Image (spheres, rainbow, N blue to C red):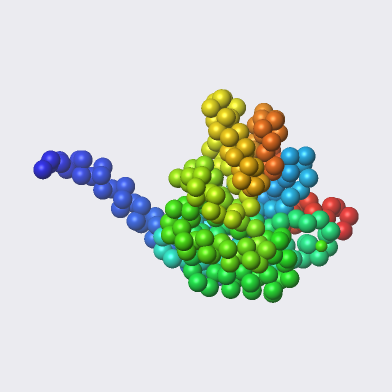
Length: 277
Ligand code: C2E
Ligand code: CA
Ligand code: CA
Ligand code: CA
């Protein structure tokens, strides 16, 4: 048995203690924000390659009562860990659906609302009822709603996931595979999943300008995606060079700061309806 001295001990354990405390603090803040109804959403536009609006992705936001806000990169993993993710997802889904239903009544464009759903939440038995309720209460056509799930769904309990996805699809709701390329999905998994859209993760888009192999990788995902009848969107597109590459290699849709940051409702509404209404 290898013995450790005290200082090693400290460096090994102090970060964990800090993490525990940080997690508890964020958990408290999520609970309070849920109680006080302070979880809200912003909408990031998605476009086709010719810059026509496809729709919006709703992204969760939570202000910090101590000032500023807490990034979803921090609070979503905590919500997943402590079993609050269903509540957070649902809050965002219902609020965004409420907004979206009002917008589509005023517009003839067939735009899509995409929402993120944690795999843990998706696997719950009442998830399908929640989606049905959103469609019925807000009067949103299923075909204009899209659920984004990460590709980890394909590895963890694949059978159950497949059933959930088929139930969702039977309502006409679309399925997007989020953060595509970062997980362990193989072609055989992909073949089985009745998803509609592959969402290539930002990390690959980031590297495309400087790395030929990253560019080839993204091109390969798009080719294979198309062969398998998926549409493909790239997330985190920030500059013209990336956009040109994506256009060359046939990417269908673009999401990223180059054409739009996440927006508050009023600005998203202006984007759809224009300044005149
Ligand atoms: P994601 O689903 O991969 O969402 C994309 C993230 O990239 C968002 O960060 C978005 O604001 C950011 N982004 C988009 N375009 C650009 C760009 O051009 N440059 C840069 N630097 N960033 C860009 P955000 O809003 O901080 O969300 C982070 C993650 O938190 C999301 O990653 C998603 O996994 C999770 N999340 C957010 N809202 C929800 C939610 O309501 N439910 C669940 N389960 N997860 C959520
Ligand atoms: Ca309409
Ligand atoms: Ca997403
Ligand atoms: Ca991502």
